[in-house]
Length: 286
Ligand code: NAD
Image (cartoon, rainbow, N blue to C red; front, side):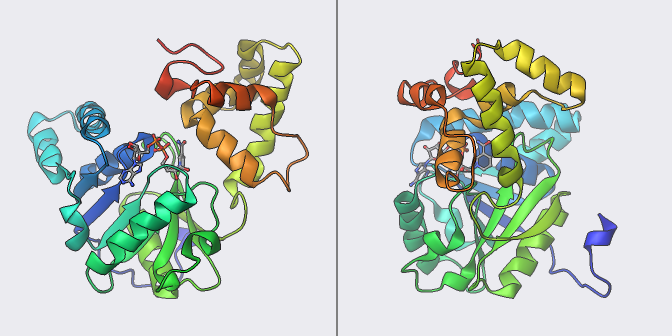
């Protein structure tokens, strides 16, 4: 970690307030993680149900991590559900973690940017959309930076800090500093399809799906990977990340991938079988 910090680097101070838009698998867990690191976090979603689920999951996580009921209460007090999105106006960092859809994300930026404090950072947790695509037509394209956390947030130390040709270097510095304050390892990555991690991970996941389609049982594929030393097998990982997310990443990277996007992945997503979050994927999740 220390080697990633350059000598004489004086990082910006820790932001006091993070506003997260999108309280799904990632946004909810990033919010709870940040609250456990002392940040005030407002968490926004378009609907109350995902917010309630995220807060319940956040409480469970904080109870496991902090153990002390007083500290859990303090952290929960810092984690504020915010359906109206008032937090956008007060936060030093606004992190978008909504569905992986260009138009939906651009609509969020159009609404958020004019309300944000001058100099506040706008970040996206996108796993597959290039910054150039997201900032097309945006007034201040230099303000958006990728802050790509991995799933599960509490276990994965890496955060890709993604910059495009127009990204303001100060925004990158602030994003890297935030990642460090959250006890994560920021890796600067140039915006390109799959960034760095998915460029490596997707061929591996898709080969595992291809094996499954050839008739090898999911458990057998995953057991081979875990016996090899992976913390989780590739099909369990695909179910955990969400099959819709995997499909979206695979489609955006299709020009780079040698394995075609597998039919069973498309079929499951079309049928609403999205993995762990929907109860059904390559495994059944009770
Ligand atoms: P998800 O489907 O679990 O959650 C998305 C949430 O966004 C939902 O609760 C939805 O109600 C909300 N939402 C949609 N439109 C909204 C809007 N306009 N305003 C407010 N809320 C809105 O998705 P996820 O898996 O958490 O993924 C979120 C982002 O993180 C995506 O960009 C995805 O690519 C990225 N990502 C996902 C993973 C993963 O493993 N799932 C990992 C890294 C990055």
